[in-house]
Amino acid sequence: MLPSWKSATTSVVGCRGHGFATEAARACVELVAQEFAPTLLTAIIHPENAASRGVAEKVGMTHIDDDHAHPWIVRTVMGMQVSPASSD
Image (cartoon, rainbow, N blue to C red; front, side, top):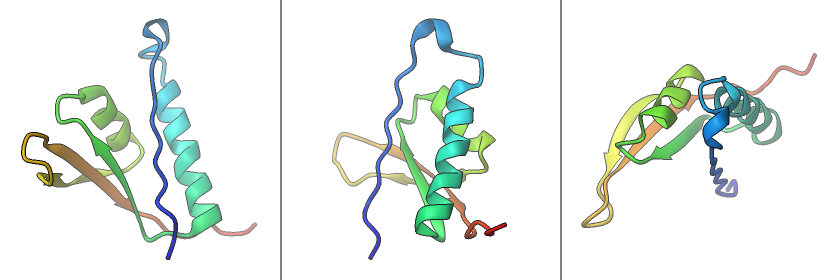
């Protein structure tokens, strides 16, 4: 079984809107595909965080479900199929 990997990002106000988060997310997707070869990659996002959802969509993720595991918290689950990286 693969370990559970979590990534958290924080933006500095002056850096927003320049594509840095999208670039970092793409690099994470590539790294995970190369190192762990998962079939599904997911992101757990607060439903009101439109910027994070936008980044997830830019790297190819789509809405999978809403997580209602906690009685007061709803989280948006985004995900994408990942194919193992080719070794060139």
